[in-house]
Amino acid sequence: VTSDVYTDVVEGVELVYEQLFHGQFRAMVRLAAMLGADDPEDLAQEAFVRLHGRARTLRDPQAAVGYLRTTVVNLTRSRLRHLSVARRHREPARPEVASAEHDAVRRESSRELVSALGRLSARHREALVLRYWLDLTEAEMADAMGVSRGTVKSHVSRGLDALAALLEETR
Amino acid sequence: MNNERLDELEHDLRVAGRSFDDVEVSPDAWQENRRRLRTADSARGRRVLLTAAAGVAGVVAIGAAALMAQTSDGSGLPAGGRDATFATENILGPIVQAEQLTLDGRPTVHEIVLTDTTGDGPDLCDRFVAEGSGSGSCTRRDLDADAPGVAFDWLSGTEGDGGLRGVLAGVDARVTRVQVWMDNGDMVLAQLHPTGWDDTSMFALTLAGDAPTPQRLVAYGRDGNVLQTVDLANRFGRTWLAPRTQAPPAR
Image (cartoon, rainbow over all chains, first blue to last red; front, side, top):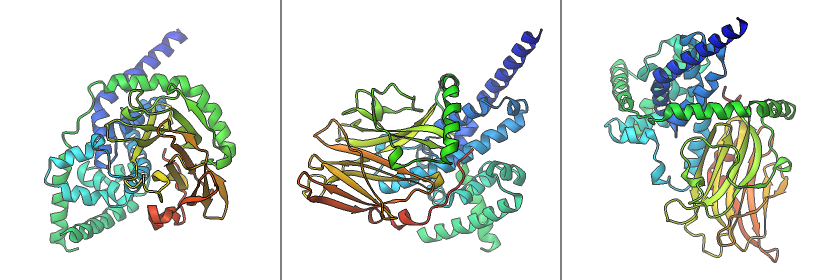
């Protein structure tokens, strides 16, 4: 009986995980792309692999989505530092490795704004993306960014100011 | 910012966000995820041991003395995503495991290779490979690489969490040794590895935490003559030598 229960639990967790993957993978890729990740799909995959090791989190699908979001935000911030410097220091990017972000941006007239957003500090960019592009509540944003709600407000406000200033510069 | 401008900016932001509505994902994303999970499972035992060791060494323990150089046949830890730069048909020489370090709390191998994926000439590429994932990029050969005053044919820098600073470079056939001078006055000799192309060599040096920052590279020829000196702050910008924040690794 114990073995059967264990098997049921494991299979239940796997089922939840699979449903989460099919329901949320694209959303996490999109979030990573919005945050400027160089390889959004790779980051989303990594976030799901980390989630898989947390059976307790998987028992609460809402918490699992929050965990995924936080992981994507953190991973993007972490890699962005490397990649942004790599871009600045290295020769022009290889044309065949254009990022998903660039692919999306090219098709839109909002290129200038997205470009300016990419020049903000990671925290300001995260705040504006989560607020205006994902329509998260302040509580959800605070959870995803690992900061207080007051700090979220501050990042949004300062992020908007910084964005406006950057757009002014380019006009 | 006045209210009118704020409203306009918020509106523009929301419109711009729609440009990401059609983000595409690979049709085999689920299969790729299963593959990564299998890799993560098989590596779990090893990770526990290495994490324990890293705990003794500090948050991110990397140092010239700890650098390990091995030649890989490419069958080591798997890299994430599509990685044509390290594909057998594109590489020009051996994939070298230049360093082993701990990034984001995970054992990571820094691999470097000279490769040519486009036929436009050799690029020096690197990737940081942890179980189930990898990230890296390439740098083009210097346009003036054939000039007598240029010995560093490829040169790039990397910054990362935990005060990480990294230098990746390739030098021409005249170079027999490279000194890396740190901002605290220390010096280490770079470990040069043959690229397999035109007698050039390559090296990587990644430091983090309380370690000093590489400040100057000096390439020497066979007779002990200086072929080229590079001050990295001039190449990478003055922030290179700025005090480093040691943000906690991403969780």
